[in-house]
Image (cartoon, rainbow, N blue to C red; front, side, top):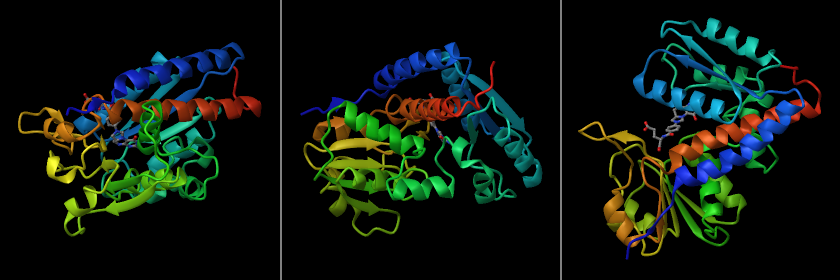
Length: 290
Ligand SMILES: Nc1nc(=O)c2c([nH]1)NC[C@@H]1CN(c3ccc(C(=O)N[C@@H](CCC(=O)O)C(=O)O)cc3)C=[N+]21
């Protein structure tokens, strides 16, 4: 057996076409959705993601503002930029690219973003709303994975979802979103004993640990849907996931590749959240005329 490929590029493109149409409606009403991205330092990987985000936002007709700050920037100065963007009516989404240099407290920065512009869904208020099922910005990667499952008609209700990884931005919110959709959820992490015993029970296996080809056929139940959130570089500098794709595909019924799986969906959901924020501003008549 060879599992079906879950094509994040194609599904992302479909959703971005829908976003583009709605952006065009908003612009016809005089409101241009605006996304601001703050990039601190010059980490090459971060720069690549940020460039992709800018390109994609322009493609759907949004305004994109990149604020580049030196690695030596103080927390106070960074917070000053956040405050300025909070008060800028032409900006509907603010993203501070993580990780930040160690002399800056990430929690301070995330908490300073106006929750109504927190298109990453990282602000404690939005995380809280997400957990209790209130409408809010959902963290882009887990949200994108839900869309991948929905658009491939993967049943979630009653299924056993096993999440490997418990980060605040992927693993934890992922489990909550699946729980809301009536999955039975198991979290595994670096201290889990006998990982394969758990992952082999998964109908839906989500892997977000950041270790190249860590998960392989011995971890996977026949017919499982496998979602690879990993973004690693192998010894040749080639982008690869946390899952040994070729071996895992033999057992999976469907699987995401890296690249071309979860990554393009993350960016798409960021645009969707930004659109949403602009639509709310438009309704409240606080979206400035461009
Ligand atoms: N505040 C914040 N929000 C984020 O959403 C955020 C962040 N910080 N820090 C870094 C991570 C990483 N991330 C990715 C987004 C898209 C791709 C993506 O599009 N990947 C392509 C390949 C890109 C390539 O070729 O290098 C793919 O998988 O097909 C990857 C990674 C968002 N992040």
